[in-house]
Image (cartoon, rainbow, N blue to C red; front, side, top):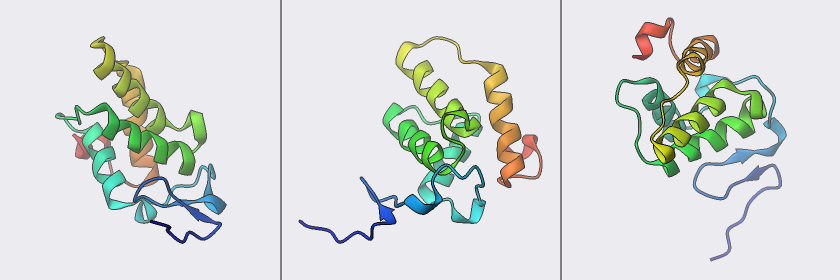
Amino acid sequence: MSQQQRPNDVSIDDIPVDVSNTQSGEVDPAEVPEEIRSITRGLASEQPPTNPLVVLKAARWWYIHGKGGTDPAFQWAIEWARHLATDTPSDVDQFDAFLEYLVTVGFADEKAALR
C-alpha cells in the first residue's frame, strides 16, 4: 500500500498537489485537473453539485493552487458548501465575483458562457 511520491508532488487523493506551485495566484486553465475543472464548471452552472464533499474537493484545489483564502473559486466553493450544509441563501455577489474570476483565468470568454 506504499505509494511513491516526489517531494514536490504530494496528494491525499488522486488529484496531485504541486507543492512548488502552491498559492501562486497564477492559474493556467490547462493545468487544472479534469475533475476539478468539471466540478468548478458545475459550480458555475444552473445545476451545481449537491454533494458538499465534492464541492470541498474543488475548494481545496483552488485554495492550494490559486490565491489561497482570497481565491474567488475557493471562496465560492466554501460558500456553496455552507449553503448545502445549512440550507441558507448563498451570497449572490460572491457568485458574481466567482464567475468574473473564471473568465479572468480563462474558463470562458464571458460570464454568460458559464451558465
